[in-house]
Length: 511
Image 1: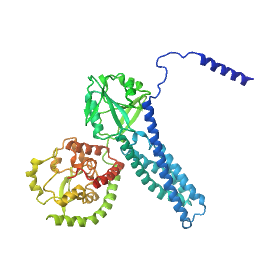
Image 2 (image 1 turned 120 degrees about the vertical axis):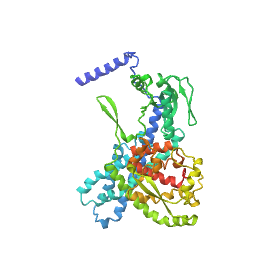
Image 3 (image 1 turned 60 degrees about the vertical axis):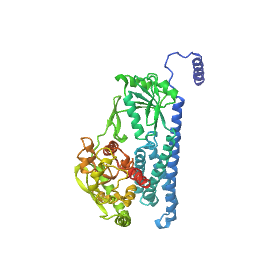
Image 4 (image 1 turned 90 degrees about the vertical axis):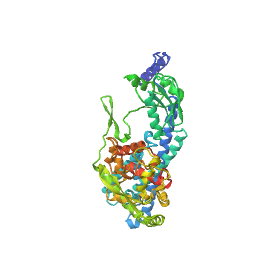
């Protein structure tokens, strides 16, 4: 009886509620997603889903192949129970895929640029290794799991990184045609908006596709930058309605108009249901994402920037990486050195190697080695060619430099002249990846900011090598070096090495 009474009362209450009129209070209804925001969330889910399927395929493939290999050698390994062999890949795959998801290796904000995506894949694999090593140690007679740890995880990690790199190439190809990118509106003063636009263009960041700009005190005249014309919006107060009309899903606040302390809060509330993110621009430039973190204190959103350090464990790891890579590279150099030396000797008289004083870390000079690419009297001819200098700043650049030999032109185009520098890296005078090694005359012109390039060992390759080499202006070269010095990481070094190999195979900007 009690149950029947309560059920009837609940039904009557619901029926009464349905007959009551809605309280007409403006703003009481929660915001609903606009079509633009729904489209953005859809392609983000689709991209993450594709990555998850690819990761699962790679993990399962590597673990199963190793398990099949273990079954083939089961008598040698003295495996009696086949269930041990079957349980090892299943447990490895489960832990590995959970770690990839738990460390947010497929977050939309890290896809398409930077080393953070690859770093999270490496961290997830390392975490899986540590977790799986526990049952392996606890169960001494589980050789199948040891094979997963020693073979499947390292091979799978390499396969995962290659897979992510291929997916990144696909994502960038879609973004070049305007797809799978954030349709963005910029807000702020004209100078700040122009600066943000210029930096987005110069860094080739395709994740933001700017569709308009709301500029303080603007007359509506469009902005032109890098051949692109950006519409200027009439007002900033109705930015949410404008974003919905233009199909934008992201707003970048380049500067706070009129120093209004409440504008940011009002803007974020206006964009609810319209945009996925509000991005705040800071003049703290050339700071990589891993150095920035958020530290809320009782609701106060503080942005924390880690100050770079130039000693410690990570630098010891960098030195170890230099020794390993340069050691293997010297073995390859020994093979090609004989034909290169022969070609240099036959092309022009003079020594095979060219030693030049360069400035290294902390201002110490060293003799940098290169295969000779110029005639022996190149330094004497320099004064007569200064009028034809095509470079900016203290560097001498000339596309058709008459001092360069025929063999030297080929060696420079493919960066083969720099192979002896692996010896400099092996003995610790240089690093495999680092800032460009400056000449002493060049270093004497450095001011208090540019001199920061000398905080790290100069590199055989670096951001300057994969970003245009001699085609870069002086300011661009300095900015790339300073960015590397303050934000370097082991994962970034590995990415630069891989991209350098691609630049060497398809030379550009080397003369």
